[in-house]
Length: 33
Image (cartoon, rainbow, N blue to C red):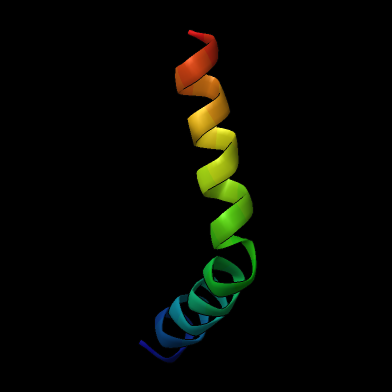
């Protein structure tokens, strides 16, 4: 459970830092295809 919580915390931090880039990539992929 502790490892799961740590993984979730790291994922949340990663999402906060790369949320804009991920949205941009998804938008480009949708527009391309």
